[in-house]
Picture (cartoon, rainbow, N blue to C red):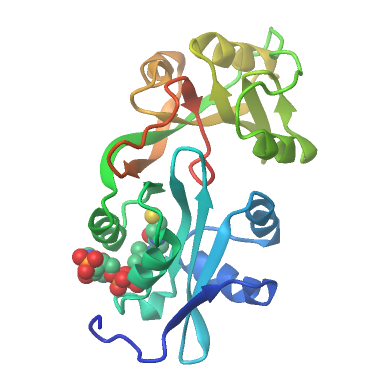
Length: 250
Ligand SMILES: CC(C)(COP(=O)(O)OP(=O)(O)OC[C@H]1O[C@@H](n2cnc3c(N)ncnc32)[C@H](O)[C@@H]1OP(=O)(O)O)[C@@H](O)C(=O)NCCC(=O)NCCS
């Protein structure tokens, strides 16, 4: 048994009755899991689990079974219950019988220890890039998305995204987030977005540091505002032409 482990701690599937508790726990981790987010991940088939101890929800995890691997989408433990093994138990439950694993992890030291124990080694950083549109051009034309993750792109489309064959632009506050870009030559698509939006519009995107876009960005007034680390078990790789992705849903 883990040190200080409450004897009655259990992991079970989350139900909508847990949503308020999940929202509070995730907020303590400086993130948001509101009704809209939970509806999105449930619609994408993400398996949501909670840790319950002393009759209360004390932790929350989400995992999606993707083509590449099972991806951890969320992992949060209530601030006053950290270090008791709940995060470890949640991870063991969502990854049980699933040896191909991946996640985009924050810098939290407890998360790193737990992910390494499950065989997920750090590969590369996912850079959060932010820049500004210049205007004067036109966006890539609206068209059917021609890659995998069609249901995710459809869901973004229903909530106001501009969907083209290789790029998805999601409204984000007053700006736009490039949520997904899949193409062997990504630079001309980002340049079209920067020219196609009204001058001054904030443009953000999450880019693997190994992508040509990461090299292109600083010379075009995009700066790095944060990063996550892609961690995966041996043999798990993402499509080489996936140049912008969503750190929560890949
Ligand atoms: C990350 C988090 C989920 C871990 O949950 P937890 O229940 O506190 O973790 P556990 O008690 O199961 O400990 C997990 C591992 O981290 C170690 N650990 C725990 N607290 C630690 C700390 N403050 N610093 C370094 N290591 C720590 C444990 O010894 C254990 O290591 P082991 O697997 O080698 O035995 C929790 O701290 C959290 O919610 N953090 C804020 C949100 C966040 O950063 N989530 C991760 C997103 S990637």
